[in-house]
Length: 358
Figure: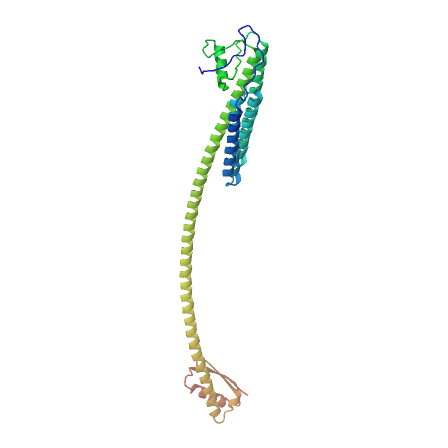
């Protein structure tokens, strides 16, 4: 059992208890130095946060404030153990922890952020209730001790009474020293038992809230990891699919390009061949036309030279070596002469006569 050096503030068994005096600060210099150190550490931590930005800066500042609040609470627990100071220290600590949790929740979004904020609020509510219940229980215990005449006095830690032994341990946990008095009541009290039960319920609620918070944090972390892994896998799958599609598109484009080139080549050949054929045909046609024109000229010249033939009334046309005569003459003999002249021209393959006698 922990050693407790305490002065005794009650009379022997059967005496009446006076209201206890809570442990107050008896070392102002030490108390002041401790609080000043907490403030200096806080200022240094906040200065480091100034280099940050966004949510990281908010979290850094909340952590610095929580560290300062924890240091101040520790100082109060050592140098001022009054119910009001205990409640204030625990309430400040609950608010600082809530501020840090809130800053961390702000980095989340959607349902994760809502769950995070709900857990933070639950922990804050439980912690504030615990702080208030602790003060109520402490005050109730003091009042009951003052009104009860059957308390007991513990001069040391060597006792076989379980109730006294538990009370001694409780006093030791308050941080008492040789200058600190601690009142121990051994007779059962309805007020004390009620306060103890309330304190137990508050502690259980706080533990449950803490477990829920840790479980929610672990679940959120697991979800984040799963989401990140899933996103990575999806990204890889999308990238692979895109690569395959790109290859397929490139292959199809290459095949289409080759097909188009081959088709263009074939068409070019066909066009060239057609052009060559047309050119040949045009050349041949030109030669034929020239030959026909020459034959027509020669036939007309022969008709003019023929005596006793009125050639002005005769029309001559030539197509591919075939001479066609038309028009009017005075007699059949003139028509025969015209036919004879046309047949005598070189290059004429045939003569067709449509000459009529007047």
